[in-house]
Image (cartoon, rainbow, N blue to C red; front, side, top):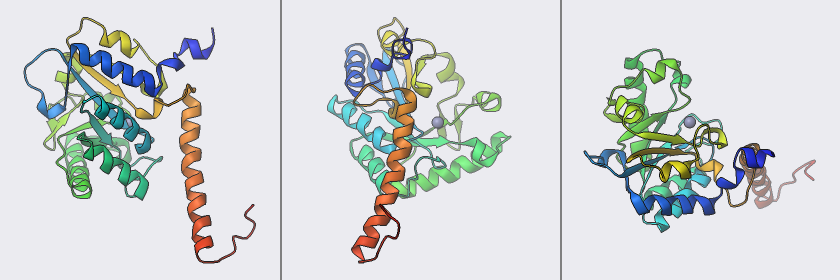
Length: 249
Ligand SMILES: [Zn+2]
């Protein structure tokens, strides 16, 4: 069996992403975290943006074409993108303009957080920063790279934001995630077609590409794409100013 078969590379295309949204719409309402009331038959679809706001925008466009709104969690300390950069900023602005919700993808490891009070302090800072940057209200947050401490932080809210890892979301819903670009347990399509009435789905849009690729190829492309854009920026700058780029091929 090839890795392509074993890890279902073919599941992770944008065409299949659209297909999953369509299957979901047949049996469920898509909900945002702060819209949730006591009900059945819903999908909470969330996206943690770990690597690429540009890929997140692609998912957002597909969802918008299907009339669905979801939540995008922004990581302020990513090593792979910076929301203050023009392209990343504009991608997130467009996601918001398409009617989607945004939240904080909170990285406790950046602050070396050991207590819930430290979570409240720094989460509030990041919430205020995102609200001022994107002129939106932030309602919810998700933890980045969970560990034993984080998985015990199960209160419904911290810093006034809905906690995606609270008891409610962890215990009362069927969860499925595409973390690391493969299905750790079940395939998402099987979960969406299952008998469960409350679904909590997590996708990282970096894993959903136009063509079939391996997980590592996708990360490689994200890294190379950013590096190439940086080089081009510098080259264009020199060109505009009639300067010589010494040793540039
Ligand atoms: Zn993450």
